[in-house]
Length: 247
Ligand code: MN
Image (cartoon, rainbow, N blue to C red; front, side, top):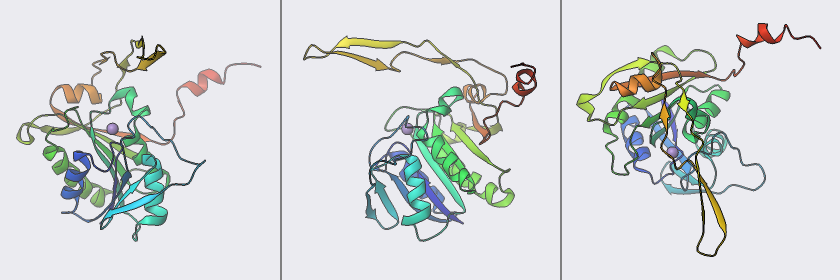
């Protein structure tokens, strides 16, 4: 199995090293990742300036672009194999509920799916730089083998979240739905040392609804969560209602 690895925390983040090590046991691995943190860059694609890629070790490239750029460059240019699987992570911090729409980690898996390549994103529910990524990395390798055996449903990629507990305390994976964030919309505004106003998004505490069967519920109970996501963003249930509208 040939595996392309990327992330949004940057190529020097501990999570991607741990992931690459674990996946090297189940396949041939190449890493193409942003040269710095690009968290919350979502599915951004760089179109208006050229990208640079630096070979920092055999099979490891640092790109001055987004996770989506990295998948593009990896698949179409930098790597000398066509990947059977793209894995993005291991992200520092969970990607749960509505937050998947901001996530560069998740978007990299989405980009691979657009190319017809099976993919998953994997995140550890800890913001500590020195967190233990071992349990998540082990699960990534097991999941890669499952995908090799079963494939993935059409246009579907997986969003994996792993609780931040010791590997032996992890509960079995559950297939889950995308949960729901509780928004407070708080923005910190203040004045910088030069007297100019600034605004800082996302600094408030946030929370999620505890919905049965959701990614959030699984994680809160100590389970690994695996949510199948797909490319079709159509709300099929809304269509019959909207088609009653007359113009
Ligand atoms: Mn990140």
